[in-house]
Length: 384
Image 1 (cartoon, rainbow, N blue to C red):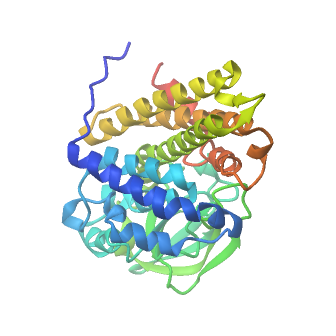
Image 2 (image 1 turned 135 degrees about the vertical axis):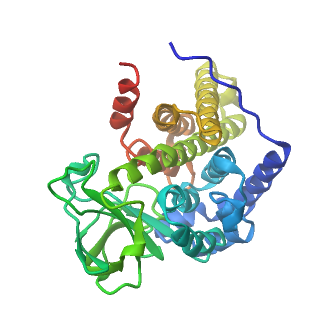
């Protein structure tokens, strides 16, 4: 049986930062959410807004121009933004995912060259691991990198990559030794978007998160110097897994924000909507739905915050707790948004109200950053 988890605390200055982000989300981001979803356009204006308020510096240490406030504060911010617009929350999520390999394994030269420009919002990253035939199974990876003198030449196509066409650089995982297997035969490289041979391929038309471009970056003989290697040659699988152990908390925070946003909207609607001469929140059927939605969301928050605190403390069971938080928060988001649509009835099914968008946005949180089926495997392996 596992030991009793340590408690976490949120400093007063972090709560103040949370409140400031919540105001930005409600006053500036929420009014844009429906348009972002409808047009499927990346919100460059909101990215600049987040940069101006130091929000894009949350994933980074002070020495690289960041806030140095840690994983819990970062994911509190993602939650607050996702309450208003899940697509905009993904801007902050990819700030972490696309730079974690560099933060954890990159050379000092790579960190100094890239992290400060991301912290200010000047540059935005991307994380290019998945492929058409290699989603949950990195053993199916076909992108290759071969050494040519002091350079490496990368060929292949990735898939499902967030920030495609937006990112200034991509952390690309490629097979460098096909005989060694995925655990020792994959290497991570930084590939700047302006390198010859890089191009933007197919962009996906998605169910949700439509304000964030997703698709296929193509690498056709892209040459990068050896100093662009992240970690060591053959260490790429470990680089990717270590990054995902931490970054999947962002997907959990996004899911939590969606769930809380849907709960808040449904509760407010139920106070105002009248049927049979009284507000519908006076009916026990609606009361029980709202009670369950709020309870599940609160439980998800406690698990997420505890997992984030474990990252900040350096606890050894981070992988297990991040998997549990991602699994639970995303399942809660799906359940809660479906119920929010039900509370609104016919109005919940139309685009004039936000809960149908929230339901569509929630679904991807059960899929990306490792499907929930994979998370269950990760958790189960810790119980053997």
